[in-house]
Image (cartoon, rainbow, N blue to C red):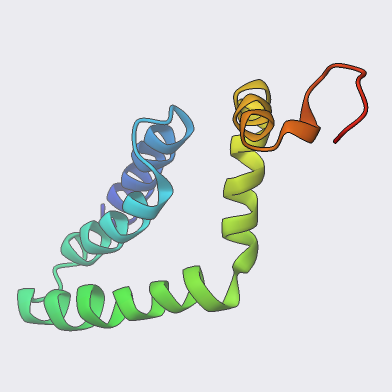
Length: 104
């Protein structure tokens, strides 16, 4: 029964992330808390071990060990909104205009 609940929780959160209703940065800690609750971990351990200790471990993974997370986020913005990004850049830097006139 516990295994079924854990798998069901994982599938539910995966569906939320795939449908873009919940970002992974929120889904992963929420899953950790729910998994701990499913296996009947005492509340004090959930607060101390899962939330407090887990958040510092996730912060380390998000910030220092995986700079590719931020590069991937920037790349995702560039892929999904390239025209808007180019227009913002071209308004800030006149040399990036689409016209064939030489720069400066």
